[in-house]
View 1 (cartoon, rainbow, N blue to C red):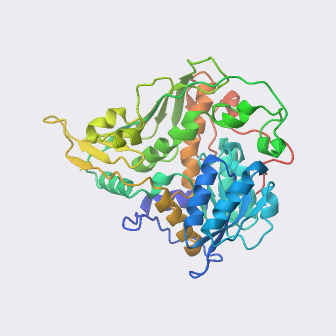
View 2 (view 1 turned 180 degrees about the vertical axis):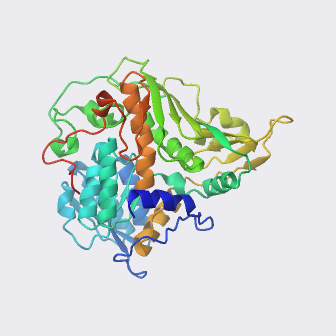
View 3 (view 1 turned 45 degrees about the vertical axis):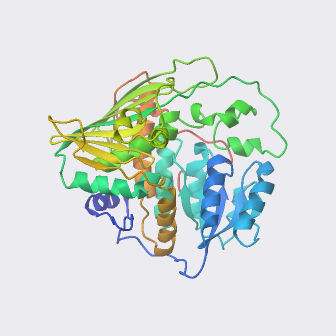
Length: 452
C-alpha cells in the first residue's frame, strides 16, 4: 500500500484485542516461514539494548540467532557463548560489517539495535537484501531518511516492526477501545510528560579508538570526526547522532499519545528547549516544551532532566504505590475529554479515568501493572514474519510518530519558531532555514540512497 492507502486503511482497521495484534488484510504475501521452521535471525548492534533483545529472541523456541554483528569485536566472545547456550550449543557467526551477513539468504529477519543515526540506512539495506526487520526507536535520525526507510519496506514487501513496544501492550489496547467508544467524550487536549533526573556528562579529549572497534563504521552516516569516548557513551545527547531525550525516551510517550488520539500529521509545531545544566558535553535540551496543533486537538510535550524529584514509573510500582503515585509517574499521557479525563502510564502502569466534580477517585482504574510489553511485541513481530501481516508498530506508524519528534527538534533548533507542516511532502512550509535539518547528506559509503 502507498502512504495514502495506508493512512486511510489505518483509520478503519479494528484492533485485535484478544491477540494484541493489528491485522491489515491488504498486506501482500511474500515468502512466509513455515510454522514448523525456526525464524533465522541476525542482530546488528550488540551493546545494551541490542544484547537484551538478542537474548529475548534467542530464548524463544521458534527462533535461532545465526549472526552477531557489531563494529566492536570485543563483545563477540561472551555474547556468542551465552546465546549458544540457549540454542543447543549452536554458536552464531560473528561479523563486524553487517553487510556480509546480508549475503546469507538463510537469514529471515534482522534485529537493529545500533545507535539511531544508523537505523534508517540499516533498515533500507536489510529490506533490499530481502530481510524482515525489527528496528529499535527512533526509526530515523531525520525526517527525510525516515520516509526513505518506509519506501524501502513497501518496495521490497518487508515486515518492519519499530520498537514501540507499547503498541503491543494489552492494557493500552483496552485504553484505546475505551477512548474510541467515546466514553470520555471528544478529546481536545493531550499532554505528554517525560521527566526524570539525568545529569550532564563530562567532556573528554579525542583519542585513538580502542583495539577491536571500527570507529569509522560506528560513526557511519554522521559527519567524520576523531574517536572520542564521550561520543560513543553519550550519543543520544549529541545532535550528530540523536535528538536528545525526547527522541530517545520521550518518543515512547509521543507514540502512545498519537496512537490513542488517532492523529497523523500536525498542522503546526513549535518547541522551546534549553540546557540549564551546561557543565558538560551534552548539546540537546534538558528542559523542553513542545506544542502540536492538529485539526481538532492540541498536544503538548513537557520534558525535564535536571530534577531529582521525579520517580520513574516502575519505581512507584515497586514502592507499592497504586494510582496516587501517578503525579510522580514521569512517563505518562493525559487526555482531556468533554466527559472526563484519562491518565495513561507507560511501563505497564495502567490507566485511569476521572470525571467531575464529586471525587478525586477514578471512575475507571485499569491497573494492569503486568510485564513490560517487550514479549508481546516480539511475539507480534515473529507472527507477522510468518503471516506477512503488518505488525502492530509498522514502520509507517513508527515514522509518523518519529516525525513529531523531528519537527519539535527543528523548531527548537530554530529558537522556538512556529513551523507549518505540509502533510503531502512532510516538509516545513516556507522556511528553508528549518529545512536544513530536514535531511543531511551522508558520507561515503554510508549514504541513505535517494532511490531505494
